[in-house]
Amino acid sequence: MLHSLHMNAVFPGSFDPITNGHMDVLARAAKIFDHVTVTVMHNARKQGRHLFTLEERLDILRAATSHLPNVSVDSFGGLLVDYMQQQNKGIIVRGLRAVSDYEYELQIAHLNRQLGEVETVFIMAATRWSFVSSSMAREIASYQGDISSMVPFASAEALRRKFAPALNPAAPE
Ligand code: PNS
Image 1 (tube, rainbow, N blue to C red):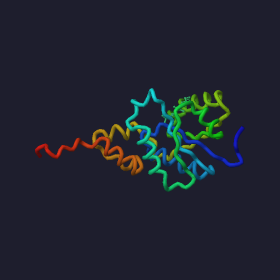
Image 2 (cartoon, helix red, strand yellow):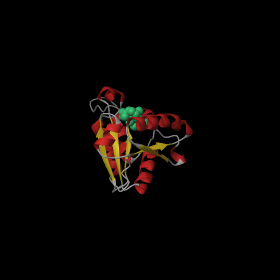
Image 3 (tube, rainbow, N blue to C red):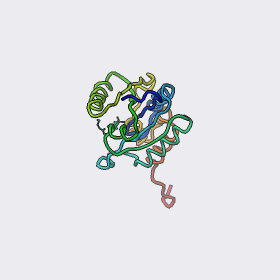
Image 4 (cartoon, rainbow, N blue to C red):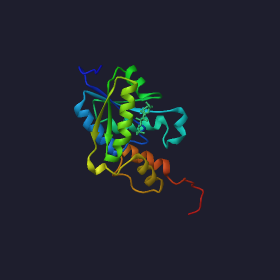
């Protein structure tokens, strides 16, 4: 059943870290729905595949979304449909940047609908974010490239800290 009296949505993802594309989708979702929960989906077995720990990703998300009054941050380590049921939520928001995202998203949306009573709503990110992804931001930041126009401030700061050249005050100039 869709819980349409209060239209609450869940925006799930890895958010490693959140990008301006995610922020754009989230801001649009926050205008449509009464409340949006950004949920970091994590899997203990995949923990090593992420740059940021779950706590770091949550800290970044909290900082990046603090200006959005109807957005909250959460995490879950299991199937998305189980989370949705547990939280009594029926709508999943996912962002689309380009047609290339669609095939993967369509598969997940159909699988989720098969697994649980959930609807997936797609929100198109603004075209200026078409080429922005968490993986590209990580890649550029790892070479000390400027990612400040691609990710929110909290993500940019966290990326800079993560890839800061090791400080060794004893080292000669
Ligand atoms: O930001 P991402 O990595 O594209 O997000 C993918 C995510 C986390 C939404 C998806 O992998 C997910 O829902 N994982 C939780 C496990 C699950 O429910 N899997 C079944 C659907 S693929």
